[in-house]
Length: 186
Image (cartoon, rainbow, N blue to C red; front, side):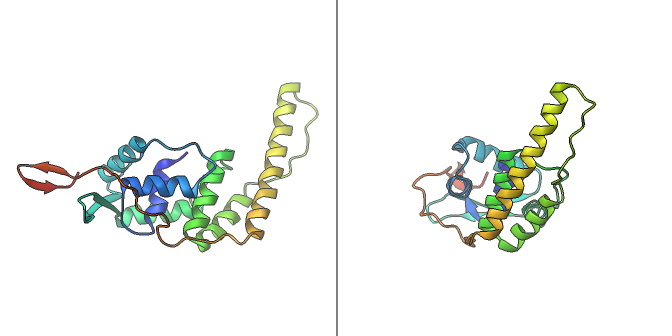
């Protein structure tokens, strides 16, 4: 999964702490195996270093909150609407994009689906190629058919966006670092 992009997309809902983002990621992309919470925190650290995410204070019990910077918001919005798509993604990545986008902002999901459809094609079967290449070409055609059908299902369904963090508060999270008696954020 593109955990980086998924976290940016989810953070468009507003500031959140790491374990909250971990729980939202699992709820909004249920087709995926559970993401390691350490991967979420490591990704947040890298996003902070890249200037896409910033620290945004603490929760009442001292957990650091993360929020998007302007650059992070631009990158998240581009991912959510498919502006960064240059080819049809693999199945799991495609599901990540569509499910997270549709759960966060329906307008972005509509744009994303239109962008993805532009990469779908009905290839005519070539006959003057090796058997392996012919089978690969057939697999591509079948994949495009499956994606076309699934995107039609998504478009026809009444996907409810969840414009706020939907889950109850997880009980734990990464505490703020304490240095010389003063609270400091990561």
